[in-house]
Image (cartoon, rainbow, N blue to C red; front, top):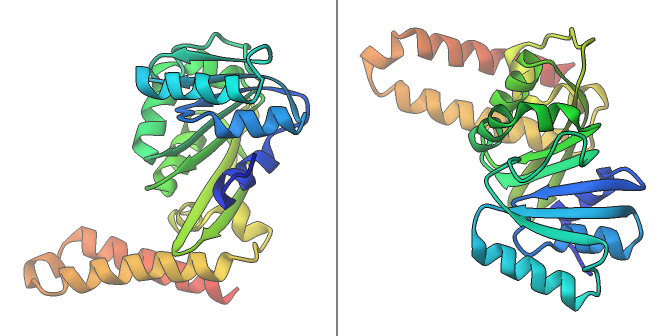
Length: 230
């Protein structure tokens, strides 16, 4: 089964022999591909709506995978029990939605050996949430697919998580910075462009330009530019 670049990158981060929970699985392409490749031993595909669950069941049945996978309907992590899945994927959702899912069922999220999270927006806020709630960042990945640049965050709950990061590091991805990811120049360009557009818009108003928000964003842009030169 052929996966797109985003899902292939996520699949590569799934541990060999894992029991996988794919939250918001939709067509169940990711668990199907991993089972067919014999990378995982079992999969639980979940979705909040009945329609995607039926589609997922059809995919698994067509691939002959109904004995090694199941589909459960429910919101977020609620269809799962603690320690039932050692790897949980939550991908293709907004960062705020992912935070809500993790907050709603913390026992399940914290029991997993690995969380693989792919937020569509506000990845920096998701990173801050993870750090503030006892998770450590294990790895990060960037994937370019046409005009899109996807950020993937790998984390786990840990009692020894003490690392703190600056706002610029959270925006860019501290692990991406540490390993000097090959797509880091695109990440710098993307994040600087967003900040510059926000500042440009605020500069149209003298009142907005004199706010703490403007000063904060300008400082963040300067910090990003400083990291780019390192």
